Amino acid sequence: MIAVITGDIINSQHADTEVWMTRLKNLLGIWGSAPHTWEIYRGDEFQFKCSIDEVFWRFLAIKSLLRSQENLDVRMAIGIGEENFSSERITESNGTAYVHSGRLLNDLQNDGHTVAIKTSNNSVDRDLNILLKWSSKDFDSWTVATSEIIHEMIMNKDITQEDLAKKFAISQSSVSQRLKRANYDLIVETNQYFRKKISEL
Image (cartoon, rainbow, N blue to C red; front, side):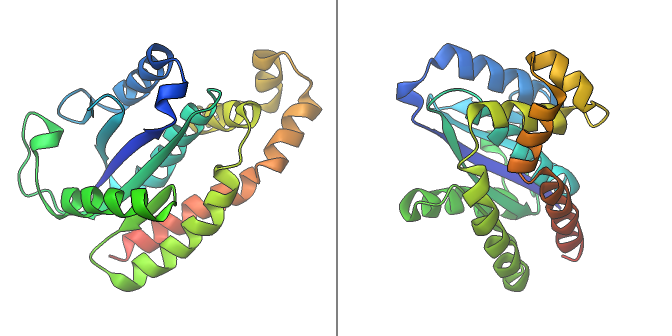
């Protein structure tokens, strides 16, 4: 099984495209090569595949990256399933993971939520989607400053609060406050729970 994230940028027309596009390409490029592993298409939509263990952390990395730019947000549909056909272009690959993710993004665009997951197990879907609805109330309200701190923590698990304070030219206590406001410890627990539930599929 693999995970496929299909997403679209919210408010892309109100932000500097060159800035967010470059940053998103650089991030996705860390995890794989385009267009086999990821692709940005139709201007502000993207698709990306990864292992099921990594998907929640990858989702958060993308979310925090885009929310760290003023006025931007992102909507993402996570599909878990098989990859029956792997093309040179991810947008031409096929399997249940792609079908789940693509259809789910259409549903998200209609219901106003910014993240959801679809697997072949309705019970797992129900549990994880309730979790995502609650947690995204936090994620969707991250400030630019909070998003920057969260992104650094996600991308560099060894970074310290002292390192972050130097990077952003703020005090360590300010870093600590931002992490508390973002419920970072709870985010780490949520990632562990997410991995456990998906491993049961």
